[in-house]
Amino acid sequence: MDEIQRRKLRAVGAIAVLVIVILFIFFIFLQEREKKNNAIRLKMFYADMAQTLQFSMNSNGPPGDWGWHAGYRNANVINNYIVNYLRVSKNCVAANGDCMPKVNYMTLGKRPTKVNLSSLPSVKMNNGISFAVETVKSCKKQNSTCAIFYVDVNGEKKPNMFGRDLFAFELVNSTSIPFAPYKVNTDKNTLLTDSNYGCNHTSNIALYCCALIYSNSWSIGKKYPW
Image (cartoon, rainbow, N blue to C red; front, side, top):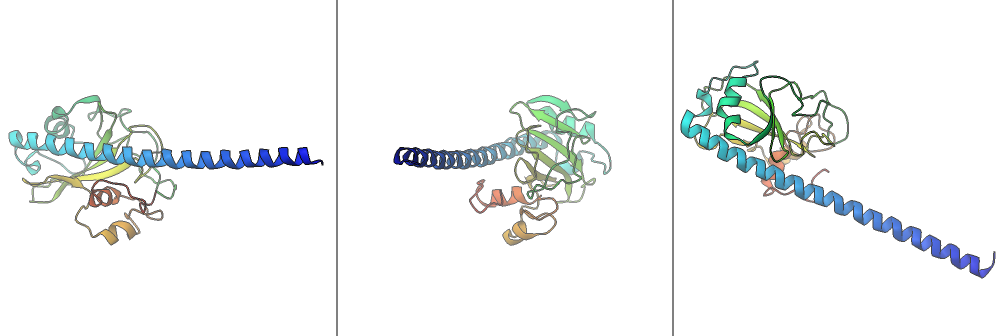
């Protein structure tokens, strides 16, 4: 192999390394942009829902008076007291539809869960955010949980993963703050490390990720387990 060929090979190698570096930087850029966009959409949903519930409470009283029944779809409650105050593009509350992905969501560790939300009462909003509602109990007692809201910030699009595009809020019977990230008052260490619901790669269902993002001023930081 002469010197010219060796120079060509070195040039090709240098170009290959440069391409790999550029692709890596581009991947990091896309990932950071996705984190930022998802955090913004999550904050936007929280603000919209908090305002919506306040309007509803002004007319209908606290959520505990709305007639929740555990084990039921509660379509009338969800439609009359929540959905009617929202801008929605698709309503799947009374009957199953395609408002939520018809797949089992993944854990942050990319393992499949048994959580499929397509059978729950759900809604797709005009901004592309979808949410499903799971009734917990009648919640007539003050500060008891009425329902859990599973919020997919990009609708039916992938990755369909807890802590990436799916997050949990809860609706409680309160006249002050009825809507908040799921278990928002949990200490930060538990939010991160809990084996069942913690925002980490090994937990079963990362329900605490929304509360963790909220505690970080609605920001997905570098230490977030993404």
